Amino acid sequence: MASARSRIIARRFGARAKDYDRHAGLQRAIAARLAASLPALEAPRILELGCGTGLLTRHLLALYPDAVLDVTDIAPAMVAACKAACGGGKRVRYSVMDAEAPDLSGPFDLIAMSMTAQWFDHPSESLQSLTRLLSESGQLHYATIAPGGFSEWRQALAAEGLDSGLVAMPDLPGVTEVELRRIDYGDALSFLRSLKAIGASAGREGYVPLAPGALRRALARLDSDHGACVTWRIAYGCITADG
Image 1 (cartoon, rainbow, N blue to C red):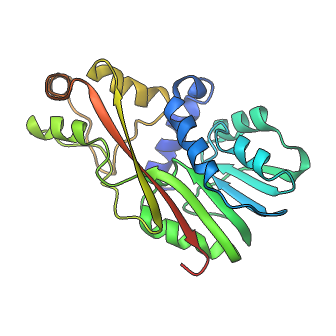
Image 2: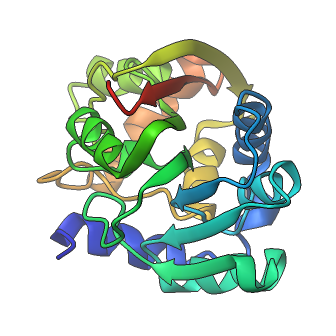
């Protein structure tokens, strides 16, 4: 059963399914980079976790024309949007599923997930646990937020003595690369609006949202100290069946 936070995440992403692609340029680029690192496989069985609107699914279908795919997301509206955009015929099964509590048995030759694990309640442990669904030679490939991401926003909050709703990502298993993407949002409010536009607005467990006045102070600090630039740290990783 999905946690209370997971249900909130599902609702917020689902509410943005129709407009997600218009605001997901960064997520699209990350999916493409992850896809470029995937192994060559013949007729694999593949599980995608957190498919969203299909930014990675499109690559999986193109890379593995003889694959059988299970494509999943916790948000029903995202699954519907992905199916409408990607199709794939009988070789693709679309389903609603919590990636931290999978109800598929495998084994899978490839598990792929782009910008999903940062929403897990227990990112490191859950990534490692998912390897039980792999075949003997299977691999799990992921892209997610690396520890220390959004440092400018964290610093702006700390400078104002304010609590952060960002999840503190732990060290992750199997990291092969960390990519830095420093984005100029023009102004601090546009940074927060960009997250809300894709549904990425659920705070960590127990977080109490800032009061309007406190939020304005934090936004002003981000503008003044960092010019509304925020750095995304993206971890790419691979875990094999034997860990």
